[in-house]
Length: 406
Image 1: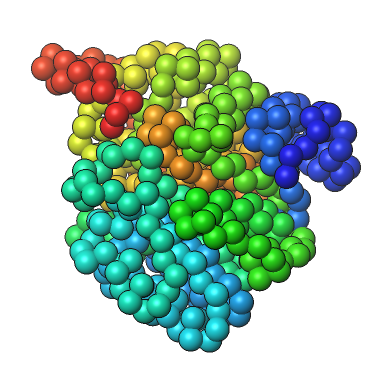
Image 2 (image 1 turned 90 degrees about the vertical axis):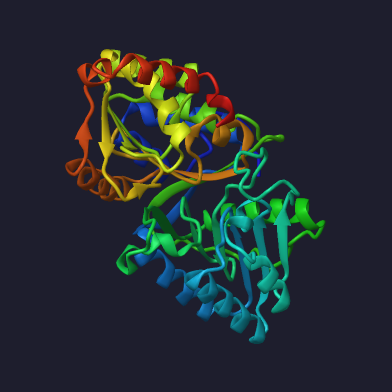
């Protein structure tokens, strides 16, 4: 749904009061994102953070077991492992109850395990599509134009989104050989319709079928106080929307910016915006993994850190297990969550889905989560970076040249 761009005058008073309470910058940011994204800002939502697969997967499975009418699920990676099998069983049982199901798995992400879960789902009769199937070897992870979205919607009313793929490595209590920390979110309220719209666009593109009607898009009632908006981004008519929103948020910040991302390869415009924010006196804090699961990406990230530190940004290395969380918080009120990383692949080449939220309660919870991560992290200094040997610095700078392709 597109809006006529008339400032904030069309928003109900309670939305305007909420934005005003968050500070002058949030109202400016709302005006900006409204013009960029052209999707409705919706009140009456509840967004609950879920830590790792330990919290997320049991809740997702419980909702699948309760489904009565419809299930839509898209994921970049959906592994054919112990937890992938649990999702497969839950989907199959839902179908036996008469639930309409649509599943999309990215054509490359499906092949992170073999045989792909898509084979098993189709064998079970689940209506499953591969997003832009490729014949390139499955290990060729950098093939372009991937669907990086992670969305589950049950009965059109209960939504899950965030950065978490469906794979056993996310369940840390089971001590997997390659554990991955991550965040996902349980969502109720009108903004769930934005998740469903994103899925419906991908399904129509992949299969030609248009999902319409009450089964997929029921009337959604208020279920909380959070204000949120879906941001659909990809290398099509939605190109560059998310990057512009992030630039706007960096510019609108009045007091603080906190970022957690697994891959930190921002382009020069984003780097400049971060540096200018810090030079304006904004408290800029960035959390990135000490050891990347993609070696070249980790090396390429280092050269940009020195200038950020010199400008006043604070950067922290989080210890293993590898942290795949993706969060941005501005002025203790505005939150960006979803599937996108801080790199060219996410912001220019992948199809992504994120939510922007104006929600002080959610922001306080996310601040708490990031503070806990930061307490275990090691702050990086300019001196540490400059003390690295010349061969290592040359290697890192060489890798940085290829950052748009990593």
